[in-house]
Length: 323
Image 1: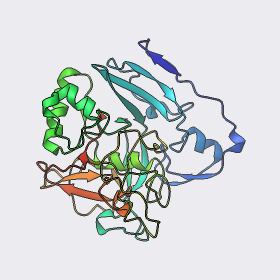
Image 2 (image 1 turned 90 degrees about the horizontal axis):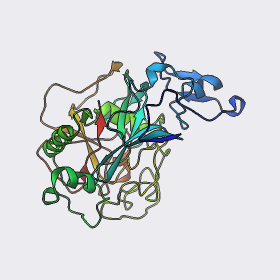
Image 3 (image 1 turned 30 degrees about the vertical axis):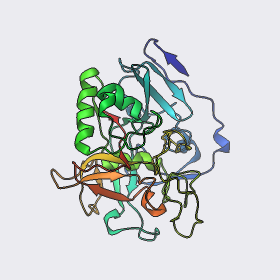
Image 4 (image 1 turned 45 degrees about the horizontal axis):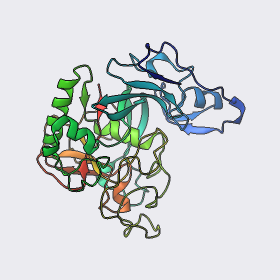
């Protein structure tokens, strides 16, 4: 289903499914207060797994308004609902991430797991819209001006903007919200970021137990957990160059680090938490996802990094969320 410049979508279509062919799955259940095995029918109906079908879902899993007034194009594909922002011909797609419960952090048995990744249950009680890619230089330039592009690698505008501080990102967000007051753009929380990166997976990477440079832009000279050495590109690649995760999000692992809104906290709570936003203040802001210049183990879903809000590096970028 795809709509452009149309009336609001009242119903959400979805392809028919064969209930009998779906394998049993252990899923993080989006509407129950525990994590456990679900039956075949529930696994599809309530999915936050690979097909992200929205038919027959509880209405609390759907966005409060669809499409938004600013959306130039909207619809549903195999990953779920999406809306496109189009400003001066530059498009950014946002994907609807349904609320749910997941295990944040890593198991102690996970190779290269760290003490600051203590696994704990997190409930995200509200869905959110997340950009399907890191912010491009093209979008940065039309909002902030070409003369204000700080990026080291500038040979194509479809590269992610990088070499930017957390404070500079806030200036960009302020300007974009002035252009679109109803957009309510911001950075994701650390919990939202990891939830979206994992896309219902519990493995070290959304692609499985290990990765290759064909899947992720990282330093292939230093593979993860006994993997084979591979390509080290030594720079960023254009957004959407590599395969997306199961929820349609590109380069959640590698390419550029992505700022989160949270202040960094060294140790997680071991208790179950709901809608965490990090400490009230601090010295460092959270970075997630790893980059082209980091090792395989440092682009894991659970890996955490930090930098001061004024710090800039040529492998740091960001991804927008709404609400």
